[in-house]
Amino acid sequence: MKIMIRRSPDAGLSIYVPKKDLEEPIVESEYETLWGGWIKVANGWVLDLPEMPSGTRLPITINAKKRGENGDDP
Image (tube, rainbow, N blue to C red):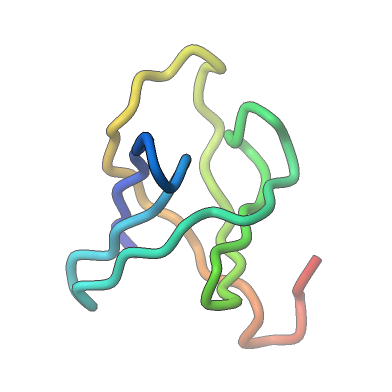
């Protein structure tokens, strides 16, 4: 699914999902740099992020894969 990751002063890192008009803060991540691992957002979704350089600038729109539907939560 297409998501936008951005940094805001009040919420820290968050995602925005345009198709669902949903914005949620990122509450946990596998890696400090985000890329190539999973992130967990406040609504309970776990998303796999693509590999990207650690210095990738935000905001950025990417394709992420949602976990959890097949019991593969971290």
